[in-house]
Length: 286
Length: 277
Image (tube, rainbow over the protein chains, first blue to last red):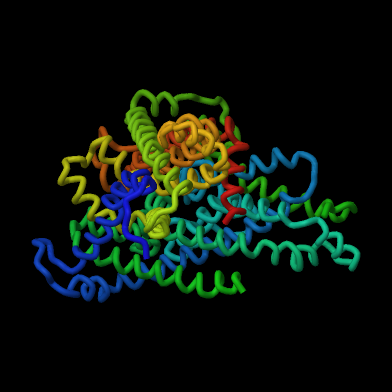
C-alpha cells in the first residue's frame, strides 16, 4: 500500500469536497443525530421514530409516495417509449414535431402544475367541459378535491411533464441500433411490431434501466406539482413524503420528528434503489 | 425501418397527432388563457380564443403584484449559484479527470450520492446551519444551498468533458514548464466551452425551478423566488387564474429563450450523457 501523499489532484478537488461536506455530509449526519434527540437536544432513543411511525398518517404517506412514484414511472415509460419509437421513424416535419414534443419537459414544473390546475378546474376547466360534452362523464368532477381522482390526476400531470425526457433517451438509444439488425429481421419477414418487440426493446434495455432509476429518484424528490396543486389534500389523500417532512418541520415546528421522518424516507429510498439495482442492473451485467 | 405503405402511414400519423396534441395543447391553453378577461375565463362553454384579447392580466402581474420582485430574486439566485458552482466544479472536475490519487473513487462516489440525495431529507439541518450563520432569507443563503443541486452535477458533467481532451495536448506544455493552473486555463478551458455552456444551462434551469429549499429558506416576501410566488398566487382564496397564467407565461420565457437558442447543445448533452451511461 502506498503511503498517503497529498498530491495535486487532492488540491484540485479540495474546495469542492469541503463545500459538499458542509452541504451534504454534515446535514445527513445531523439529520440522523436530530432524529434521536428532543427539541432541547436531549437523547431520547427511538422515541421520535415510534411516535411518527405509529401515526396512521405516516403509513398513508408511505403508500401515497409509492403509488405516486410507481404510477408516474409506469406512465412515463409507456408514453415515453412509444413517443421515442415514433420519433425514430422518418416522416416529414420530424424535427419540428420533435421540438414541440419537448415542451412539457422544458416548461418549469410550477408552470405545468398551474396550467393543469386550471385545466382541472371543476367549474370552468377545459377537461371537465371536454369530457361532459363528449358524454364520457355525466357531470363535472372535482379532480383535485375528490379523494378518488386526486392521485390519478397528479400522476397524469407528472407523467406529462417527464415523458419527453424518456422519449429523448429512447431516441438516442435507438440511433445506436445497427441497421443490420433491422435488415436481418426484414429478410426473416418481420413486421414493424416484431421489430419493436425483438429488436428495439431489447436493444433499449440498458438505456431504460438507467432512465427508470432516474425517474424513480426524481419522482421521490418531486414536490412541486403536488404541493402547488393540492398541498397534499384533500385530507391528506395526496400527501407524499417530502411535503410531510416540510410540514412537520416548518408548519408544526417538530424538527426532531421531521428528522426521524427524513431518515425513514431516506432508508426507504435506499432500499428501493438497492432492490432495483440488484434485480435489473445485475441482470444487465450478465 | 421506415414504414412505406399507406395503412402504415396512418398508424404512424394517428399516435403522433395524439402525442403532439397532448404535448402542445396545455401550453397553448395557458398562453390563450393569459389573454382573457375574468369573464371570458369563467364562461361555459369555454371561449376558445380571447375576444377581445386583453393584456390586463400582464399589466396586473407586472405592476400590481410581487412577481417582478420574485423574478429578480430568482435571477440573482440562479445566476449566483450557477456561477459559484462552475468556479468550484472546474477545479474539481479537472482534478478528477487528470490525476490518479488515493480516495478518488470515494470522492467521486460521494459527489454522485450528493447528486442523488433527495433534497427534502436535509432541509431541517440546513435550516439550522443557515440560521446559525444568519443566512435565512438572504440571497447568499439560497445561493449556497443551491450548490447542493448544481455542484455535483457540474463536477460530474465537466469531468467527462475534460477526459475527452487528449493528454498529449498538455504534455507538450508541461515539458515547456507551464504550471498546472495555466495548463488548465490556457489549454483545457478553451476546449471545453461547449461543456461549460451545457453545465451553465443545466444549473440555471435546475435552480430556476427549485422548490423545496426556496419554500423552507426564503419565507420573507422580499426574498421569495418565482416558483413559490406562483404557488402562493393560487392558494389565495379568490384565485385569479388570468393573472396566474400570465405569470406562468412570464416565468417560462427565460427558459424557452435559452432552450430555443441552444437546443442542439441541450438535447445533445442529455443524449451523450445517456449513451455514455
